[in-house]
Image (tube, rainbow, N blue to C red; front, side, top):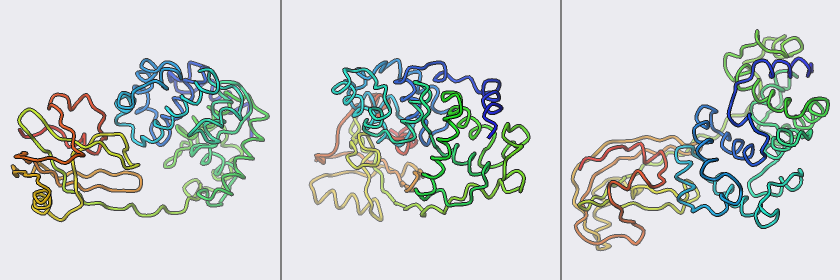
Length: 337
């Protein structure tokens, strides 16, 4: 690989992003966590406000759960942020609140894997550690003509070892970011811009016109479809929500919802529990796609007459915008009062 050409391309052409203007390992860690499964354009406004709210590990460790979840509402994959807070506590307890500066210590943080540790060490500390994410897998698979299934860990480990040999001959901070940037802007999944690629000359996929075939990724399992009856339960100036305890969207608020065939079935079952609701109207049908699930929500407005579930939390209508709510339910939108 012509590493000199790659690094020169990055220095000349990379996007100017706020988290690239710092070598603060805490800031780099925050950006890398936010960028997991999330587009750069989506992350940018969240990153800036997050750092203002939680400028160091100590502040993050002491953050109220709801304040943290509200700060990242809309980014999805909320488990990563719960693990961030756990890791921040670990930093306070084991490293006196200072972000660790060795690979082993960074890797010891809850939620931090090989990729994130490699990115932090190479970008913040200039230590040659491989950081193999989806972008880098795509670049190397095409460049080397690797046709193994990259959903299998053994093949990713082998590619990680190859990437390690490259970064050891490079300027770590520049190389890591150059490979990520190349995958994000030039060596894209579809319609790669090969004519602008600094690695084109020795790229196997380009020479053999196999860019569309690589990397090899076995088909993911079909997502599970869930059908919900979702209730907007009104009570004069109040509304009833539920705080999720399930792993998916844990800690986020939602409208009470039920896996039943009809709203009448839901109302009848609740009536047997002493909860009397009056059906007002059907609001809308909403679909939301997660990575492994698809939710189909038939949304109904109901009025509470008497009784309530111990799971339900009563809040004022105007407070709805202030609490952390996942996009799946936030997109239900304005209520018909």
